[in-house]
Length: 359
Image 1 (tube, rainbow, N blue to C red):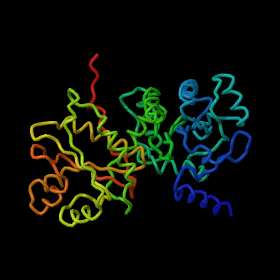
Image 2: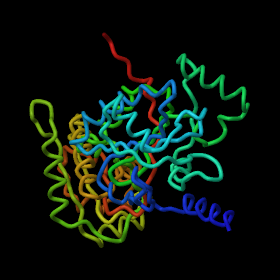
Image 3: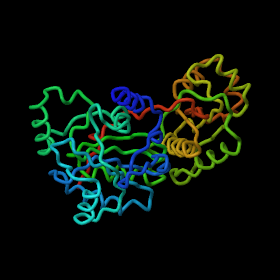
Image 4: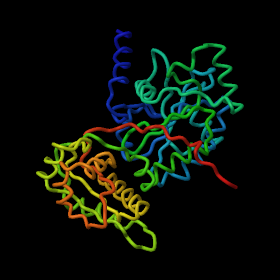
């Protein structure tokens, strides 16, 4: 019976479709649905009161005080699995944290985060974001790597929680965005939190290139908003050199899809044209504005160059260009495919080392 229950809990963690599917117990033993936190940015932490990382409570509380009014919630789950460093009852832990760090964020009942008794929430979190390693160039990261490797030479190949104060960042719509090890710098975590709680920045961070769309044209009113956002982009000397053609004609779109590959059967197309002698930079700013506006309205986009090269060089696409009514001294620069997304692409890695700060 006990084994069956444990297996059921494990299956729940693996099969859950959203973080909001889970319930946890608060510090009074009452069930709390994580669905209560929909619309909040979450930082989920397994903590301990007698750990070398315990002073992070102070940093976490400072982070909470800074961003709680902007939608951040820190969910604290004490765990005694790592060096037995979270002894006592949840009430004793709560009293310790209040007396020493005056924490205001919610603390939940003690749980296990690894093994046969792990909470299904953590089964889910680990499935979403596995362990990606310690920074061995950092002294604390090197120390943790050495300590754990002595116990298990292959520890880094497993998604298990490695120690106290591992953290997971969850977006307002429930996506598990990042996992932080206890040695990761709080300044880096704060930067990521800011990107999520700020609506403009979170919209930028959430945008992905979408290549699968529902069979549903975008409402004209939304297309008007997107075009208005585009033409409000900056341009050199305010010349606004672009010409924009928003294609809503479904027959025209169907016809061009028959002969031109790479438009992904998007229900609408936004064609951006520029003078033959320049304007590319200004047009890029225009397009970024439109794609971010579309993202904020629940739409997906992808910027296309390949089909444009085909259209500009192939007579079979002339009928489409003719309908766009492009002036003689202009050229089709790029196309934005736009529609209601039928996929949720994952973020691809970004190389932060390409950015250098000259001080």
